[in-house]
Image 1 (cartoon, helix red, strand yellow):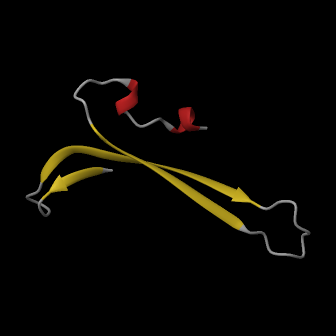
Image 2 (image 1 turned 180 degrees about the horizontal axis):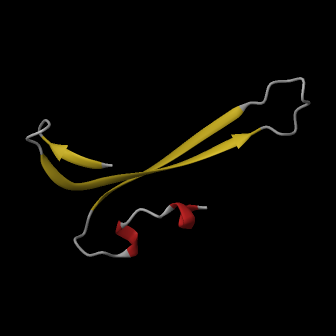
Image 3 (image 1 turned 30 degrees about the vertical axis):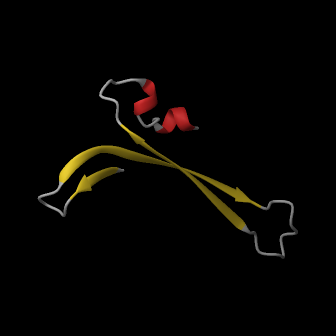
Length: 66
């Protein structure tokens, strides 16, 4: 996600970015008659783009994230 100053469509793009990483857990140890619980956890990383194309500044591809 990128951040803008001002409102669309005249906003100015800032150097701030946010990446969201999600993990979903299921309780598979429960008997089948009991509904499965689903736990979701999100971790967000907010940072300023440095201007160089270092690996730290780019979002991982789906293949790298798995």
